[in-house]
Amino acid sequence: MSDDAAAQLETWRALKEQGINGQFTMDTEIGNALSGRCEQLRLALEDIRSDIVQLEFLSGYGGLPSANDLRVKFQQKAVGGAPHHPDDNALARIDQHIEIVTTMRDAYLAAIGKLEVVDQETGQSLAGQGEQLN
Image (cartoon, rainbow, N blue to C red; front, top):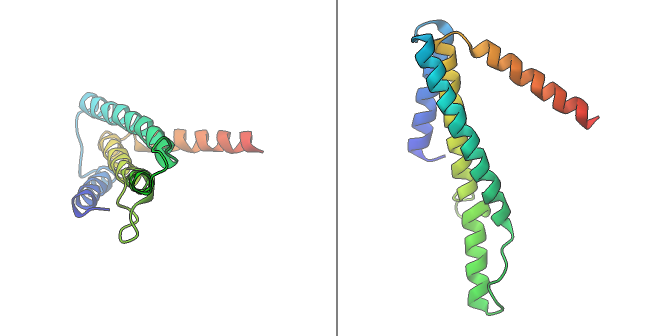
């Protein structure tokens, strides 16, 4: 994770903890609006992530060695990273943004006392998905 992204994540984690502890509060209507916007952004980022995953195997570059080199580099930039930095790819960056936006949403929900409700809904959703797998 880049230093800037890591710093942002730590800031929002701290605000989430402050919300849980009652030190960070806000008007319920504002908190709902902000958390709703974060959820919209998170869903949009998830859509982008799905598109990026499809770039793992590219084709149509031709048979020249230089074309193959380009194909490999583009695939690495999409999902693979470079040997010296495996997280240097679009997929890792999008995952970082998803984590930050999710933590932002949770911080706003904690600030208005609704984080526990979201955690319970997520747990029920995951339990339902697990039952479908069995």
